[in-house]
Length: 307
Ligand code: GH3
Image (cartoon, rainbow, N blue to C red; front, side):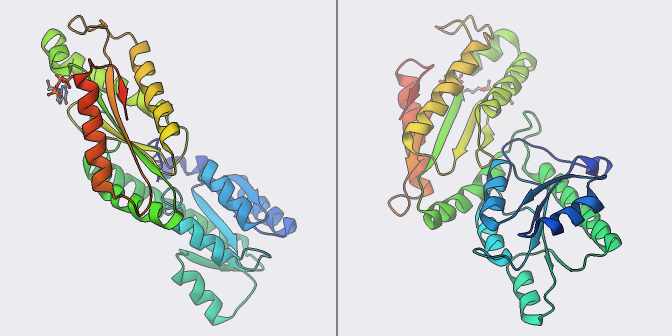
């Protein structure tokens, strides 16, 4: 999952990033030689390093060596598939081992394909191209179903589907997660003064500003309806969530979108912030809490974050 919508089509497959994971640098070189004229190649020599790279900047596809010391390719794959931000990245296993049970383990743990060493350049090129194309087609379909047509951030349907996955991953990783509800203040009055077309333009500006504030690939924003957005921050404690909420509030205000009917004279947002700690609460409580805090923020005069 990505917080910025970045759907590629077959026409620009060339912008794709492929992560090659192999403990032997010579094998990385071989793959690089075959693919680097068509794609951007990044490399990792261990499972740990691959996971770190994926968390910072998820690639479009991973070529993963099966047999590696410390953390095998299959163990690496299991971890990547458990995390929301990396679960959808297609993984092609690469191995010199020809045992049936090893190949089965690769399929069972979420691999999309399997390539034998020594690598045949034509096989590698065509398998990579086929899986990148499938990924982009899937992304395009998802964007039609899950993206808000007006603001281009995720929609309510995406939010509802992913909040459950977030609960599962929070429980598994024993980490706090945060939810921010960001609501444009006096938006009805803004529309009354400037009309719906200017209102729509401002909605898009607010969506862009919220997206720009989010730093981690696992963070995401969805428009729930009207002028209200939900921001999900996995693995984030209250202190971090407050800092993101404040940053969103200040950034929207700094746009200086005139709003004569607002007490601050510019378009502003109020933010309700709640966090959930694994096993103590669930996502329904998280949403209820954020709604209550948002209501307090509105009652306290707007242009404010409450937690
Ligand atoms: P408050 O500060 O108390 O939240 O005041 P508010 O006026 O923002 O209250 P409310 O949330 O009830 O009003 C939301 C308004 O958002 C109503 C409608 O005029 C406007 N709105 C809802 N959807 C859209 C949209 O897609 N485009 C535009 N331009 N306006 C919308």
